[in-house]
Length: 114
Image (cartoon, rainbow, N blue to C red; front, side):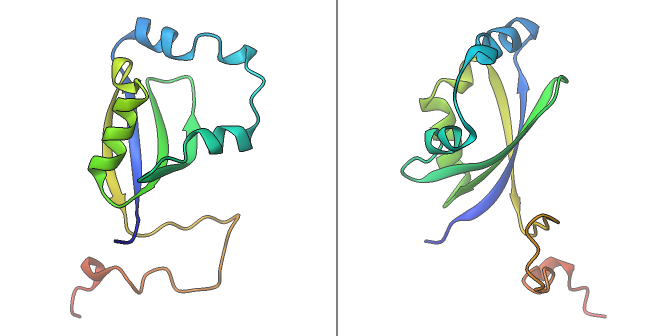
């Protein structure tokens, strides 16, 4: 089975869990490639993350199924801190990685028949 892309929208259980979730992070000496390697697991991989100071942060996952992402988050203990909603991504355009290909061709629900 081929992998699909998902956007994960995460929100914290509370301000307290948000604080606990991020405690100690500033002291880490982990590189971005080490971060990437931490999130390559059997059935899925986190490929991008966007974090601000608000109550939400976002990740992009590649996986065969939504369940695999939820299972991975549960195994690493993220469920103790965050709630996660996953949405499959059918099109992703990144201006830093343009290909010159038509990104709309494979999206069947965009075809209105007109």
